[in-house]
Length: 199
Image 1: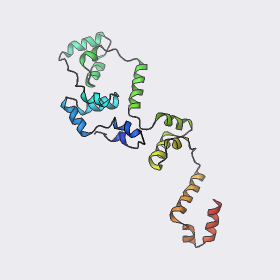
Image 2: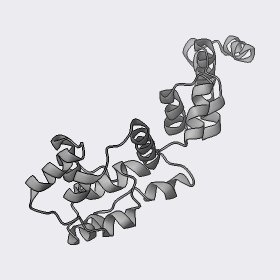
Image 3: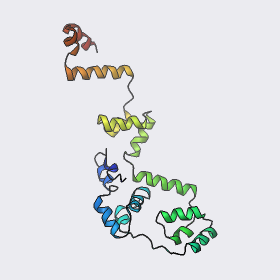
Image 4: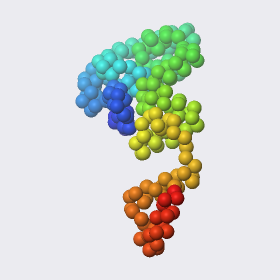
């Protein structure tokens, strides 16, 4: 299933422009297919490997040599296991590259993962980090933006409310929306107004 609209959801301001770089339209899939680029390869290039979309759409898949036995031996000579070699080939690498490119160091793998993460990031890292520093969970940060409509700064910095504070605010909003509901139910308008003033 293609999640082609995932990266446009819940973005604000300039983030929509960045999100468009990772949104792949049906027409773009079709254009890439004309060059022999499968939907899976296009998705992988853009979203997992961080390729610019134009390059991912226009770079034809590498031609594969049919002499797999030769390249398997070459890979083993270079310290590359058969499983790693085939994993690379299945990701769209040429057999030459899959058999000869040195394995990544842990630092290189970590850097590549970080680049891929940044390529699909929805919320700016600086605000996610700021929320964490302020003791605000990522889920809470996202909820404030997605469902309450707060901006990044407020969502990352406003302290968490206690249950009592949440209750007072909820009661206030209910009165603003529904009017003096206590008086409507109990018929004691003066008492309910006094309680409202205390809050």
